[in-house]
Each structure stands twice: as structure tokens, then as C-alpha cells.
Length: 538
Image (cartoon, helix red, strand yellow):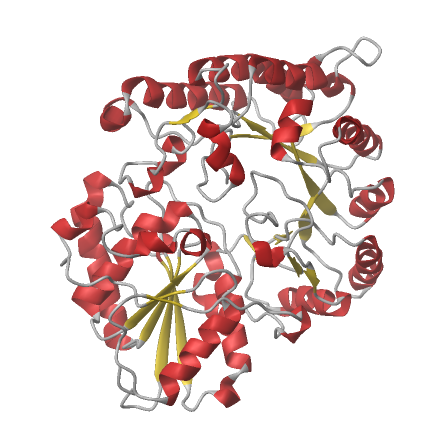
């Protein structure tokens, strides 16, 4: 492409929609890329102008089949108007998960073929990192070519993994010389930030347009994870270059919290530290707790609730006391109380049975101690995971409901808040690959992200867990014990449990069953659109 005539290079960042009901989480990955680019402006020969477009907040119709004509009309109007006011040279699309895959294709095609054919388009995120071939012809779903020309693939560049360095080098190259658009989509060289302190302090100005939509902030302090959980996208097995854990200095972390505090237009009440595990080094945790306490003691205080992910094996009583004192809410990726399931999920350092038993016992100790000090701890539990059997479901039931504590169950005796989710067949994990070949299960809609149907969040959950357990029986057995658990939680007024939760649980399981029974083609005719917190992540 030629250099811009006005000596400026305009970049449009886009966060796409999902198919159906879309999530409203705000990610800072685009901010990090933009902030890093600005920090390197002396190395770029012409000024850079940037805008951010979040399609989830632009009052577009839901991106579903029955709305498609109207959606494309409104999307075209929105992009035309934006291009008139801000004639962009490059579009950067964040296809963060497989849920955004189809809309990423839609938006890129609309821009390339109808709005600004001369612009370059780059895509990054988890899906292009692991499945870059999905962004090349002929792997783009064929129904797109009923509306868009088939001759040209809409994407010019793909970023795999971390985006800061590859994106900066791409912009530097494009602004330093005249470049013709590549004839084929180019995979940019993978590069990571070795020293996280070299990243500039986070700046939220790019998101200011959506200030009324930002209810919580995700922010990262570390990158990488020491564990090899087979279900997790951040596993060292899944992303090899995450083998080495990288930390920001604690001073830098505290400074970023101060930035949030001083950004007056931000209206969020919650800050989510989105690291796979909160400070995996104990020494870092201790220093953070000390410095964060000082921050909270200053005149202005720190009026935000902080949430973190912790690991059962790394969480100590001292950590729990600090969480309580500093108003930090921990989420523990427990996943299962079954020894065989924990073995499949590889939740411990090794598969030694004693370690797996210790993992379950440690979780119980955390629940007891948190209840004693009145700390809200959320225990993540995933049901229907590949490898699940009747016995593993019973192990979960016994752990939470067996009367082992002076005639009471764990949930009756202590406050135990479960975050329940049905397994989602994310295509990048080891457990997805092993579902059929190792466990004898079945992923009924194996490439669900390519099917343009009302709600991917349902179809990716239609999974037979194992040879021994059908999908239907999996739902029935889990529903039976979870119904009892939730009834007790409601009666005890455990945080976030409400009287309608039993209805949500029943409707969610029924919805999954009806999709399984009636088939994907009849989905729209019998499934009502209902919100259900027990099978959809918020």
C-alpha cells in the first residue's frame, strides 16, 4: 500500500461480536498493543492515529441467521460512516476466542470488499494463534461467499501469540516504505516481551468512548503458567513459549493500579487480575500484599474490589488472611473432586496418587478456613469434562454433600461458593484432542465455531464425556446432585445464590438436552433464548 497522503497512518482496532448473546467483558490486550506502539513512536517515521471500535456496544442487531440481512446493512452503515471520518489504513481485529471467529470473518470481509479495499487487515487472538488456517481460503465457511466475492481472502496478516512486538514491527515496516498488499495472508514472526517492565504503564484513553460499558477491568501482572492443565489455553503444553514465567516488578503492578485509580472517567468497581495464577512466586505475593496495603491506607484509599485466580496447591492460610484483609476475592480452579478426573486434567505437578489426594484435601482445608474467617472464595467446578463417568460424578457429590462433618455435609457446615460450568469444547486443548481417541467420548459439533447458528455457547457443550457415560446421563446425574447443592446454598444465603437459581439450572440443562435430542438443524424452532449462569460464562 502507498504511504498515506496526509503523512499520517490511521489504525482502527476492532473487537467483534459473538454469534447470539455476546459477552461484555473488556480485555486489555488491544490496549497493551496500542500502548506499546505509542511508546515506540520515535522509531516510526510518520504520526500514528488510532481509534477503537467495539461492535458489542454499537447497537447492532444480534449476529444470528434471522438478522443477517439487517445486521450487514447496519454494519455497512457504521463502517462507512467511520471510514468517512477516519479513513483507516490498517484494521486490527481481535479474534480473542473461537466465539468471535465468524464475526471476525464477517467484519474483515465487509471492510475489504465494500468499505475500504485498500486497507490492510491483521487478526490476532487465541483462535488465529492455534488455527491460522481458518483465516485462509478455502477454510473460511462457504456461506460467506454467497454475499462476499471469493477471489480475495480478507486478511493480510496473522499474529500468533503475544501481539506487542509483531504488531509494532509490522507498523514500522508499513510506514517506512511503500508496500504493496501481500498476495497471500502472511503469518508474522512470533515474538514475546521478555521483560514485562519494558511495557509502558497502561493507558485507557483508547477505550474512553465506551466508559459507560466498562463495569470491570481485566489487567495482567504476569504471563505464563507453571502448570500443565489439559483443559487450559494457558498451559505450558499448549503455548510452549509460556514455559518461562515472566513477572512485572511489584512497583510496576502497584503503579498500574494507581493509573486505574486516577483515571476519573472509569466507572468500574471491580478489577480482575487475569493472570492464569496470581503471582506464582510466594515472595512476589508477599511483597504485593505489603505494597497494596500501603496503597489502600493513603488518603484516597482504593475503592475497588480485586479478583484473582489462585491455584489450590499455591494458596496458603496466610494468603487467605491477606485476601480477607485487603478485600481480594480469590477464584480457585478446583475443577473436580475426583482423583481420576484430576489425573486426566493434570491439576497437580505430577500424577502421583498421593498428590491428587492432597489436592482434594487442600481444597477442603481452604473451604473450611475461608468459612472461618468469612472470606468469599469461589471454587470453579467443571462438569461433563471428557473422561467423566458415573463414579467421578459420585465423587463430586460425596465431596460436597456426604454428611462427613458432625452429621452435616461440607456445604451445610461451611460456606462453599461453587462456580458451575458445563465443559466447552475449546479446540486448542489436549483434552479436546483426547476426548474421542482416549476417553471414548464424542464431540457432536467438533467444528462448532464454523456453524452459523444462534448460539455457539450451546453447541460447544454438546459432548459425550466417555465411553461409559452418555451425554444425557451426564446431564441427569449432574443435575440431581447440583440441585441439592444449590438448594442448600440458597437456604444458607451464600453469596450470589438466588431463589431463581434452581430454575436457571433446570432450564440450562433442558436447553442442552433438547439441542442434543432434536439436532442442530431444528435449533431455532424449539429453544427459547434464556440467560443461564450455570452454562454460560458471564
